[in-house]
Length: 172
Figure 1 (cartoon, rainbow, N blue to C red):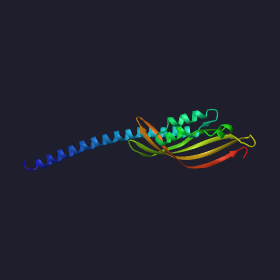
Figure 2: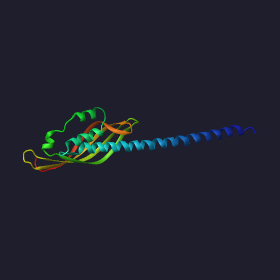
Figure 3: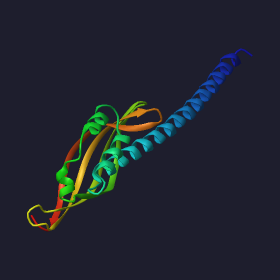
């Protein structure tokens, strides 16, 4: 029967295309799952850095720098390593805590990522003139560039996009 050859060829071609589509779909789903793991790791690293960056206790100023060094890479790590906490922060009994409001991973490759973080900072200090306790609430928006070192994501650049004052209480 003369018409069956092309029909079988088309059927074989359709089967081959179906197999390729299934394989490609599986591969794509696996890549997306791997990227989601990286996205989660980048978000966690960004949140950890912003929390460490925004949390300070005048009773342990050296601990502040040590925490930041562990979470950074490159020139930022060098700058933090060489920096010293301002003695006025200790004298004024400065303290701050940070609560992460949101993290968004905005770019991701195998070796670098960008994330934006929104965080609330609660800051307190003693007014130098009166000695009264001053408290301030601030919403901060930060952009971070992260790089992969081994299996870890570390912050290589920090850009404070802005702060919105939530108000201060106490002496001014």
